[in-house]
Length: 263
Image (cartoon, rainbow, N blue to C red):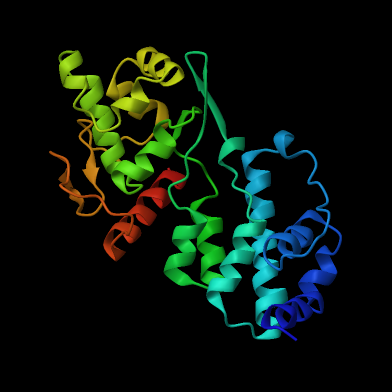
């Protein structure tokens, strides 16, 4: 028996499989992870669920996978377990909706499940932190292909502080030539995003709309450098942006999210 078949046998004898048998979540693991030729049951009504409902559902299924499969079978292969998590995970961001100036925006989460899993691995802390730090959406951007929410991840290593700094540069630019120097200008020029930025009109209004003044910015709307903490504001771009976050950046961002939720 191959290693994959052995794992499949363990999976199909786990409490997780018994609970989710013949549902979308079990089927998608069988098909995408164990390469079985199965028909995936549909997960109905996702587009009608709220951000909170999707978030709760993903949290519960991931917790069950960890406890009712990995823990009871003493499964230790973190790379393989991540494939299972990735297969069942449903991101709630597209169901978090906020509108400004007639432009519909969707949530842009600060902590991805991949980033949290990379930090903690196959531990209950991964699920707990996902539940805590993705529970309430903070930032919203117009939904467009190659828009701000996807472009910022590539350009700024997913750092929201430098994304806000770039938006500040755009709003405060004296002319079009200065706007062209913004790192996310390709996203800002997209039809919905440009209409949204024009409707907002100023960086101050953007920060007030998000409700993050004195959390992500100071009282003068200068953007805090999350890496350095609230003693330092961003005054220029970095030479290089990496996807990996430092421990300090991660913890400071956690504190910012907690402040937002405890306002």
